[in-house]
Image (cartoon, rainbow, N blue to C red; front, side):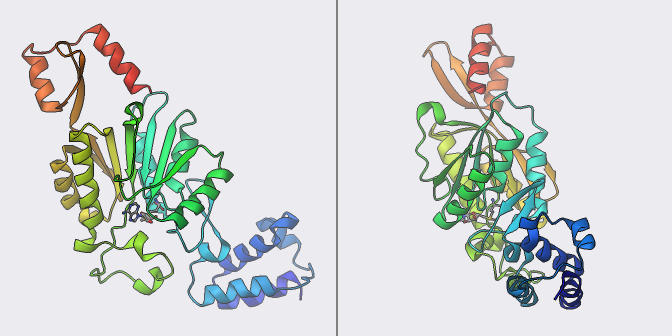
Length: 318
Ligand SMILES: C[S@@+](CC[C@H](N)C(=O)[O-])C[C@H]1O[C@@H](n2cnc3c(N)ncnc32)[C@H](O)[C@@H]1O
């Protein structure tokens, strides 16, 4: 059988573009691209078993990304298997939200629930001088993230952690400019969800209780707790959720002193409402809500001093 005949048959049973992508995937070692497929239609195929199997898997409803073993995210290719959620186009809005921020030269990012690693690795590549820590509860997901990290320059620190609970941060590691999280937020109660289509992906990467909000509930609680205890110092939090959950999440975040800044598609951005301030009397940093600090500055209780500004800058530049 030649390539043209194989494509003709495959295009009857699956989407034409998908048939071409499967052929391209299997013929990649020969340098195939889409125009190559057109000019090599008479290429005799030694065996078509691998390509036929991929078509059969697709016909059975398996997502194309798992069949091909790859998915593009923010212009880069990531390897995926059934241990990780397939990166979604709507998640790219989280990267766009981060890019609207005026960040220091060497920003520090924390990606919670990294899955394939697509968010953390993209941030590491978009901000070449950044430090990125990425966590997941699933060791299998971390293995996949690690493979992607190796493919994409290997700049991300991967760590197993149940949300923030297992983070053991040294004093000089507690500050993150942005914490990004795309946690499970799909509710089993949503009638518009095609659970069969999602059945190939790990359910622990997708579903959450309490109308899909339970994971973010825990996440915000932990952030509030860690910030108060001085275990973590965050400037911004960027999360993904269904737009129907945004209002509830904004209220939930407020309880952790996180103020809503803006949204973009499925993405929500919050600003930390707590600030570190250099206390002249104790000669140490104190952690206080932004409103308190604003009031103290206005009433002359504390003052901006060049030395403090300098120190703030240095901390912000870690
Ligand atoms: C919606 S997926 C997002 C994956 C990836 N960040 C992305 O955007 O494609 C959620 C991820 O959170 C992880 N996760 C679920 N529960 C967790 C927990 N308690 N602590 C840390 N990660 C968790 C899942 O294993 C999964 O990889």
